[in-house]
Image 1 (cartoon, protein in one colour):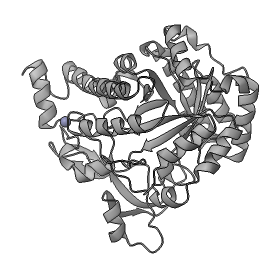
Image 2 (cartoon, rainbow, N blue to C red):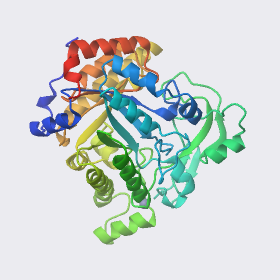
Image 3 (tube, helix red, strand yellow):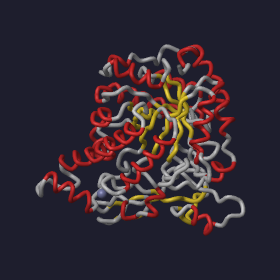
Image 4 (cartoon, helix red, strand yellow):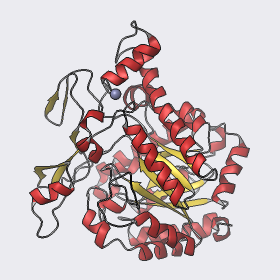
Length: 436
Ligand SMILES: [Zn+2]
């Protein structure tokens, strides 16, 4: 039990007053959060299913379950990578015909629970379909999912994770009117290995240019949400470039902004200045988002989801998430610690070893990089696609002091729910989880 508990205070260098201030805003001694993705169907996260969100998603049942297991925060994905906005929105696109965020806010208030919303930022399949001129642009010729992309071409590509089933009695042509980023290509089989996709029609996805009007669109959405809903936190996900590539975004907006700042000499794509420029572009968005959140509600905690990985090759070259800059702007950093998504013992000995190795790497990476995080940190660990001991290895190892967030509601097995409840009672104590 004690084996994986790590004394993180040795690795982080965060002002304890900042941690206390965040705890005070959350209202509880420890955060015990569960994530929920309403548009991904009732099992894992390999589906995109608006029919489920519209007709079957049962808010009361979900909140009863969370309350029973002592969760004090629901982490609700109000905008996923597809781009759907599941609240009562004027600025955005809501294909669920429901104010899901509003329903959860009411249910949370009845139960004295808090809500953090997760807001996918640059990845937006729907906006990519209706605003191709805002999609990030390739700076060199690259190959991706069997297609060659030329210089100057937009980076819209096949979605890696989600697949779509047609609702009963609905044809592909009709469904394409609702989901304009749907293709007629299908994955027929669910693969055995990790990273295998779900079954069904393949949608396209896009990472938008962070120097385009997409940012104004995102800020309008954020304003709407923070203004109209009593949420405790607003966390930006996909606050970054598309990690599949190293040549984004080379659109004329980005190139001229870069030239204006650095002159004609530094090279596009390969210079140090270009990498700085991309990181600053993402940090600029963070600053604007933080200001919008605080202007609407000074008590709402701003946050961002951080992808662990090698600093130079991944964080800087691919996704351009500068941990120091982003955590100096936004209130809470949320590292996504999902080692067992790489493999679980449930798929056999080999995949168990892959998962354990990945766990070791995630711990080592965080020890090495913790000092880059200047704000309190709340890790998200996964409960789906791993077993109960693997889940607890992560829950114990990645509590950086604030508590833990578990991902995600649908797909967590009954045995895991029971164990999570017991963990809350025995390790945190029910009193520490009460929102005061
Ligand atoms: Zn651009």
